Length: 274
Image (cartoon, one colour):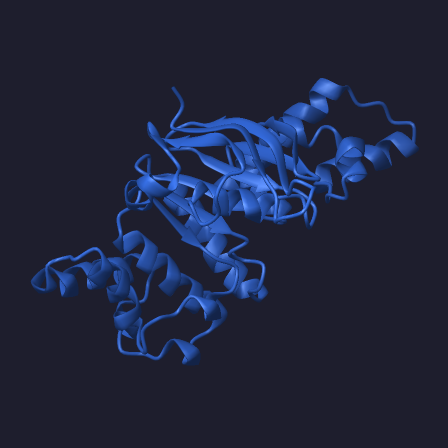
């Protein structure tokens, strides 16, 4: 049994068209999976279904042996945390400390232990000196790190990043992507990232591609990206290495498919290390 099982899941927003349409795939424990697709492909909807924020129309999602359904939501939310796209929409408290404390209070953590927990997770995201700072006076990357600290403090096994870097400036994106990759090295965490960022996809171990609500591909990134024409059909970006391959082909320089696949794999590994 896989750690996360998505089985023939369907969901619609009240009309006849399914936003998620018969999607099935598995995710193994301790892995880093990216979910990609054009706008409206069902990525964020699927993330919300996994987190129990939307109710599945048909099919099922099972997380660590527990079915995602209304009666099991307390168990699911002990296992899973989600970081959303816009950090400005995630703050509850008036300070960083208050914001991290909010989830702990809901979990009825012993108040005498809360200060130590808050400091521990603020330190993990590099914000130990910002606990009394007001979030609105922080940069986008810092705000997103506060949101991550709040999720980490809840000690979930699974963290979903729902386009968590898309509204940040280049510096903020780099900070959060780097932090996500460091988290992914910890086998205690299973990371799922909804993203448009091809560089981030190349850092992941597994890639789910959606198109019009349906599963289009599911494979390792180096295997997904050796199909550039298929990806172009569904309006996705192509990694630089595939653009190089096409440029070589136009000059009638022959390159074996296996050789390109190896280069893509090496590039993925290189990106992950740097």
